Length: 126
Image (cartoon, rainbow, N blue to C red; front, side, top):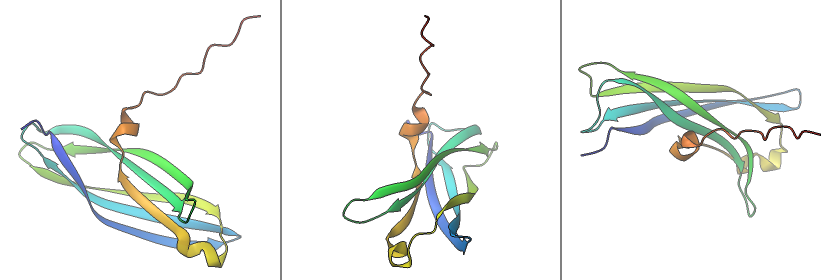
């Protein structure tokens, strides 16, 4: 009874292009937000993380980024869809034999979204 909303990822698409020794990946997500018993109309931010990982015996994160996607739920609606496209994921082109090991993950990252930004310590006085 305390759930405000539930999010699901409905579709994920990607497009890869190789040029000038780089690999550029465009990834898009379509999702849905459904109101729960404690939810209501208004604006919320969806914490969506993209990650490119080279899988294998020692997995390595190549690229990752957290987005806060604004979503507005109008009066009288119980669900809305959202979309997001990441089109600036460019890395040095891996060898052809390694391409199959690269995986794009997309998911909700509420823990990272809740973290407060880290502050730099003040400069030391001399």
